[in-house]
Image 1 (cartoon, helix red, strand yellow):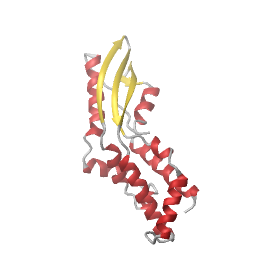
Image 2 (cartoon, one colour; image 1 turned 180 degrees about the horizontal axis):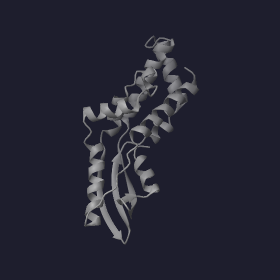
Image 3 (cartoon, one colour; image 1 turned 90 degrees about the vertical axis):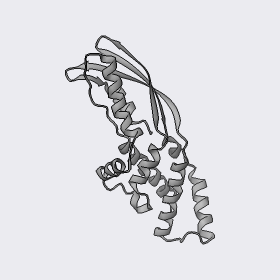
Image 4 (tube, helix red, strand yellow; image 1 turned 90 degrees about the horizontal axis):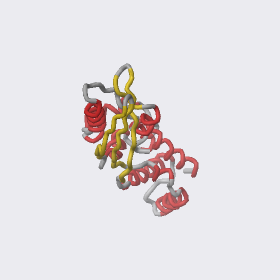
Length: 190
């Protein structure tokens, strides 16, 4: 497998996770804006925190063919691994007129670790596996090895905390995240 193929696999994996993590919070309304915003955040983030097998399978099915199957990576397995360890806490919600700021602490795995993958080391590990006979030097054997290697890396990523400051705007449909905040939420795992 060429180094460019290894990079393509890692990039495909990151793109798949970007789609899986494409959470977009819906609008919320209520008499108490702070309470409505907290409820919106809780409802949506709990969907990730409490993912069960059925929800993971549904999300994987919605994503369709990701190309990761060629490497023996099941999209549902990837989503489950990335969601493992996800948690959050709403630190504060401050309302000022028609805008509000919600401060959260999110604990999640970050795919940025895969973007910093040492492809030379991965290639050396592959060559050693081929030389030892652990892996066949054909496309199928190499792809299977690469898929296992990448999933081992994903499974080994330790969740870390990050702070998010999200801006809600009160519009015609109630309180909604502004574009920048929607983008920040959709990239929790990236």
